[in-house]
Amino acid sequence: MQAYVAAASACQRTGTRLVFWPVMDGTEDSADRPGRGRDAARDRRGRLAERLRLQSVFLAIIAFAVILFLLVQARFLLISLVTAIILFSLTADAINAIGRMRVAGARIPPWLASVVALMLIAAGLTTLSALILGQANTVLATALSYTDRSAQAIAGLFGWLGQDVEAAILQSMRSIEIGSYLTTVASQAGSLLSATVLIVLFVGFLFAERLWFHDKLTNLYGDASRAERVGDIIGTIMRRVNRYLLVKGLVSLVTGAIVYAITRVAGLDLALAMAILTFVLNFIPSIGSIVATVMVAIVALVQTNDVWVAAMLFVVVGVVQFTIGNVIDPMLMGRALRLSSFGIIISLAFWGAVWGLPGMFLAVPIMVAVMIACSTIHVLRPVAILLSREGLPDGPEAGAGRAAG
Image 1 (cartoon, rainbow, N blue to C red):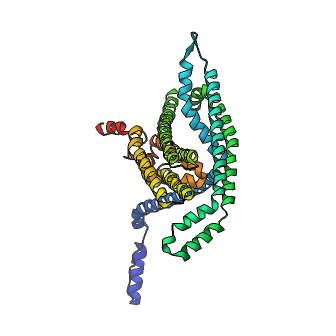
Image 2 (cartoon, rainbow, N blue to C red):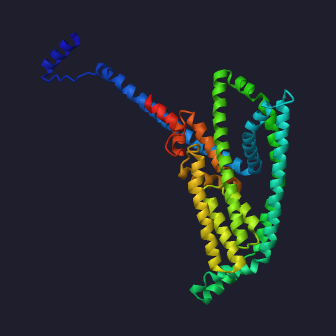
Image 3 (cartoon, rainbow, N blue to C red):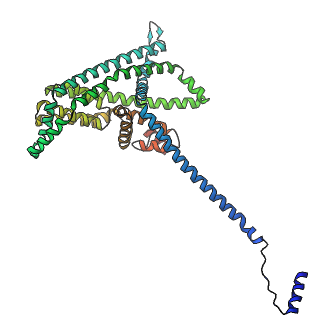
């Protein structure tokens, strides 16, 4: 105040004006400072969360690439392991049934039941491998003898386009070294023996581990209830996969027998090979039956060189495949599988690209296991809903129970 009076007196003596400028003492900024601080902290948290999301996405992509690389590099070992797990799942109930049997008043011990089951699996796989190898040799010898005739038969299908087109196609067909391709296929079929030995070893170790599997689950989770829940999930996967494989095996066996009868009546040389091919390919959903039908028609065309006979066999076998695949198969399968048709196609494409033809056979069992496992995890449950047919991976009964609740 004294400074103000002195300044005013000086201005009066000199005749100048006294101008006041507002002085900011920080009180106005201090009122807005907490709001700006909160906004800055919120922005920092948002940027940090975005960086973490990007980091998670990149880590997921890297992890997927690494897993895909390992799946491709170790496919022979992994295919044998998955096949062994499926065989173990199919025979586990049978082993339990044998273990409950009594011989002369004494119950059969579990280890003896496991040994008997392992011997039966080894004998069955060896017989199947020998049968496939024998038919592969037959097909190889027959195909080599029909190489030139097959080229003429296929070229003859395009005769209506003119002689020049037919001649060009015939020359192109003859330029293909079919013998080398057939030899490569036969050599790949020879690896069945080594795969059979590896599968039998895996199944034997799984049988040995099943005696302590429940104790291992309990010790792993440290909680008997959680271990029991995981055991129930594994049991659900095994039951659904077993039902699918048993029904599919029965349907494929009937289809193969009918195709054998049809091709035998038609007088085809490869009737048994076509029946085995039909039985095997029918385990590939949607695509396998189409390929098997086309193969029967091609074999008929090459052997008889008659388009009408090939067309008749194509229609008859196609009607059989359509009737069994679209009427009998769904009736026997019921609602046990409940997989999305589009999901099955995607699974076939993925596992076929990763593991080849064996991956296409294993695509549906793997998809069933993935759907059931994802349905038990809250974060992954949307994946299970997408993989299921009606959006009910737990089954229609469970879905009705949730809706009623």
